Amino acid sequence: ITRQFSCSSAVQSAIKNVTVIGGGLMGSGIAQVAAQAGQNVTLVDVNGDILAKAQKSIGNNLGRVAKKMYKDNPQEAEKFVSESMGRIKTATDPVSGSQTADLVVEAIVENIDIKHQLFQKLDQAAPDHTIFASNTSSLSVNEIGAVVKRKDKFGGLHFFNPVPVMRLLEVVRGAETSETTYRSMMDWGKALGKTCITCKDTPGFVVNRLLVPYIAEAIRLFERGDASAKDIDIAMKLGAGYPMGPLELADYVGLDTNKFILDGWHKKYPDQQLFKPIPLLNKLVSEGKLGVKTGEGFYKYEKK
Ligand code: NAI
Image (cartoon, rainbow, N blue to C red; front, side, top):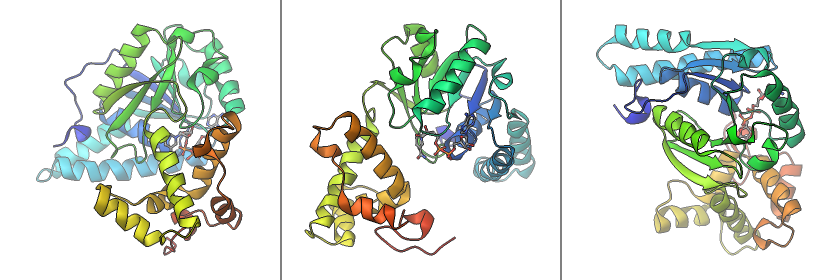
């Protein structure tokens, strides 16, 4: 049994009750791994249909995990799924959904104004001891937390997609995050079975600060006609040992997401050459070629 699948971990976390806000791709994954690790989870989304969808996909994913964990013991597997699912409550109101939380992890839409509105409300209503963390990929943790009074209890917990599979958690220390909050976030991440790294609040933290410009450079290389998409991807897989090539990865992440992050950083850091807009990327996005999810990006895919 690999660590990320374990339901109990050697690391104890003082955090027992977590509220995850946003039941989309990331929030549902975070809720799943927390419940798997024995945490009481409240999953909140403004959209009730999304919550129903999230519960269904969490159930399916847990079923797969359980099958691997308890190969020869279907009864134990079933117990694992039903116990984990039993730890997940859902709610459509973030305020009432956070009343018992030791930790709130925000995984809503990547928009600073909407995140501000949410945290302002939560700050007034959540218990004093509750830690707030954002799962933002590309915004500043300090800027998101600027609207709360409890700045010592605010930080970043940046998970990776798909959350149950990707082992890394970036724990982001904001300018005013206290040592106690930081330690609690690290312990919580470890209790979930993740390997935690610590970083400051800089654009893209560690992974995306390296990955986004790398993908951008691969697109520019292709745009200049220096090599074919296929050859660029083969080159990085066989020459650098990467599991996916940069253009395959761009298609998997979504070209709209790549563009969104680059545009945001370019606006903020106009002198940084690596963040400059890429005409080819903008063209593909304007044509609705967003990668795997639309059936075409740098490559063509069979629609699911
Ligand atoms: P998503 O679009 O799948 O899910 C966002 C959910 O938030 C939606 O279900 C929406 O109904 C809900 N929502 C929007 N406003 C809300 C509000 N005020 N209160 C409660 N729920 C609200 O988005 P995804 O991909 O899960 O991303 C969420 C966050 O995670 C973003 O900040 C993103 O940057 C970050 N992130 C995304 C990664 C990815 O690979 N997609 C990787 C790591 C972080």
